[in-house]
Length: 126
Image (cartoon, rainbow, N blue to C red):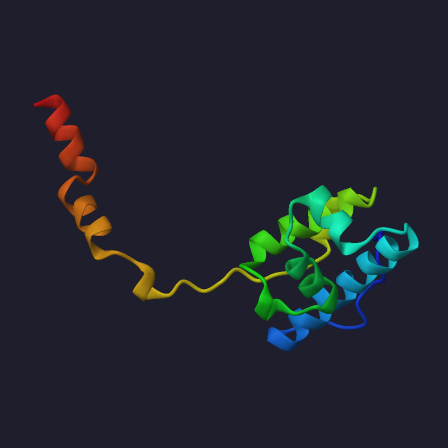
């Protein structure tokens, strides 16, 4: 059983991802307000910047870091409210980020060719 309302449909793309985050963020905000906590109090408890907490509550992915960090934020935010933070974080479906080939350093891979499995074994044996 989920701790927050089920999505009405399958979210896809950036707009869908923002709708899903907004749904979770609104739930957390409602609990926060119901418990009489300010955003600054939650920020102090979680060590998450208030601007990032506001972005979560608003469903604004553009103001947040990568999805893996957002899931961690959701976990801590939920736990700070006395909720099951893991379930809340797991309730946000995220797709892994595509790897941009420009991020790869070719020199990291050229050393593998030089020291492949056979090369290492022959160096150890010989």
